[in-house]
Length: 332
Image (cartoon, rainbow, N blue to C red; front, top):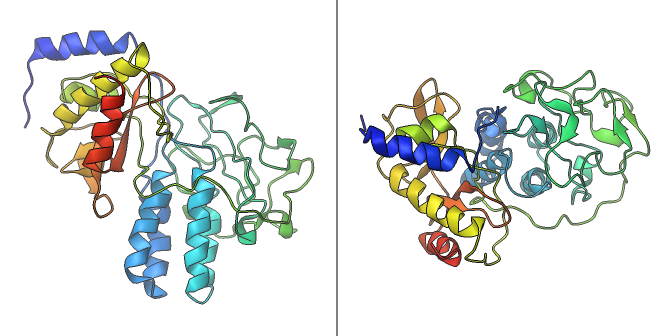
């Protein structure tokens, strides 16, 4: 068990909590979202291509990055399915995955992607929301409050695969339904929506995520165990240099502190279910008071990184050089 100086923990908690207030979060065991898809991929002969795409996909469910990360990951999953003789089970599971709710650390609805998918199999599909969300508000810049091509979603929080309403908090959609609804191209099983249907034409989605985009929120419990209490915020995938003033410098200092504390963690370190951290260079989620670790893609490891556009930090799988560069850019 790792021990920390109580005075240092208290002072760190006071310093960070004033800048990063704790909020109720709605989370899930993200690796469960693509476990069935990965198995179908292996069965279809995808071999070593399956796990990296599975990781890319499930990390897109974290409250991080751009609104289209989940859809972009699903496009990559469909691409591989088509390479494997257009495997129907992989396609079906991908269609369910792209409708899985994303984590909501602030309990607000997660915005929808405003770019058409690359693959027509994803046309008209959009994510459900978790039932515990505040259905009067969305997080972010309010540019994705309705799915592409629609004017409303009714009932709130529903999606084509689950047209009766949102998904219970933390539950995987593929455990509730088997029919993905297939969006506007199918007359059955689609969500009750208002307005025009999703365009049938497809265009290449921009800004696809990499397997390194494993950003997340770290709860106060993990941070307190590590001597740096306070929750992290939503990650930005941007790599532009941050200024050395204001919150950017503090973000860099916070990222350095978290990385130092993560280095002391082991798989047996105490944690609270729902906590997320870096453990043994992998992305770790606390399940049943024990860390479950997903190793990063080859050549990368898990780091706390400073956000670029707002106060806070994220967790991501990336290279040591990239992590050093992002932290150094803040002046920390």
